[in-house]
Length: 608
Image 1 (cartoon, rainbow, N blue to C red):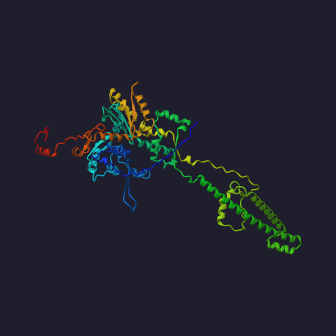
Image 2: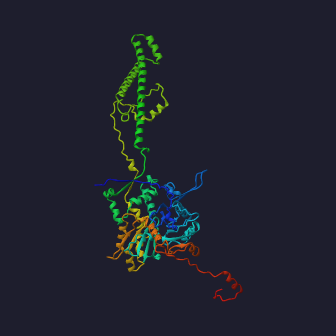
Image 3: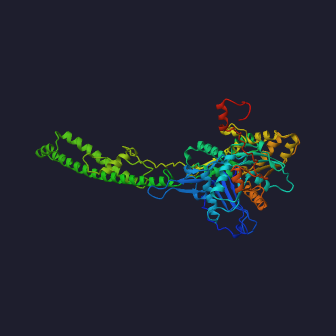
């Protein structure tokens, strides 16, 4: 037996603006505590790393990493910049939205500055002209040196921070979830908003040479789902927005353990009815063609028909009266002939424009027949007065060319309803019940989610679904493992760790286990773990690291280091990238070569 239909309404939640928080005194005494910022391409999270229990051990700010700058109204205020939750809703400003990230690397530093300004202002950083708190900032895996150089320049030159530490968000999450019996090695699968990474960790350190990136994540899944539903429901093209697609992905999508087998299940009507999710779009009952509008139109039509029926009855009575008067006149002339008053009879024929008594008799017969027919029609209209005028067919009004005058509005109404009246109606027709088509307006505004629930998230395993020439997560994972020896592979697969917002689909852990079972040797063991909070564990891990290394020099880049070694400099720690300095080839000074060439002396093999 089919389960009841599952109808879900879109929440279309609006973002509430972030309040300006009053920081606790514990964040400044005895010294400023670190400020932890998880700088993600989807969402920015910020909070304090303070051991005092009065300071919340959770991110105090969470907002989308987006900014919109409007030009302002003509003749009004200037340009207005809105950041994060101040946008309210992203859809009205979709064409104005800008992100500082390309893939997951910040490249638009002026937009990154707007995000940092928003963080410092809303957290209530009270230092004048600078930010005197140490900063713990997350960055992408194998972050380009140029991006780190620009970020360090922004933090040290613009905000005058005392020191900063960079770490990889997925590694922070890995170390936050590490338990006592966990090994220090593992294979981290981090899938976020724009990218998916495979990170091998050996003996507590990232092996940067064998990291791999797939340029697919939640953003591409949302765009793919939007295209699928816009093709399926072209009548609701504008209602299928990216924000609603993200809501469907977060709450209604799942990963199929076997994609082909799951598609075969959806072909069964009973399975479809039991598992389809219906998303209700907002609609109004007062649309054209709705039930209310149809009833109002029907009532107006009935009033017009009643008015025409009354007009026909009045015209028939007037015509009957005129015909009766003329018939009486002709009968009076005929009586003159029967009484033998020939002079008066011939004089009356001349007034009537008739030539003979036969012509007079013919007119009398025609008028008598017309009077009798008019009387019958009046009786029939009185008999039909209680019949619904919509279901019955009224007669055509007998318009007398010499009759009474009528208004132009009446003529137009009669012409409009002329096909509804029969010229002759000898019998009263039985009323016919009007058949109204059954139309469910609410069901018309529903999106039926069937195979779309598994198609959109499947792209991280099969990028070819959207035409991407890339390997999926399973193939990339196998490729990374094959770059190690069998002993190292066995160590890595003992701790396959899933983190990132795009790993929260139901069934993802079982799918990874199935893929590992297929690629690993027979009867070999492996373990797959999911982060306790895939979205926030990166921030919690960065906070844990900041609390542990707050008083140490390890992992912190001071202003002196920045000035001496450049903005791309990085101090490594357990959750950081590997620092690879820039090595530029040395060039011989041109000024020293010029004299030797000019004099024509010297050994060309010797340095100048």
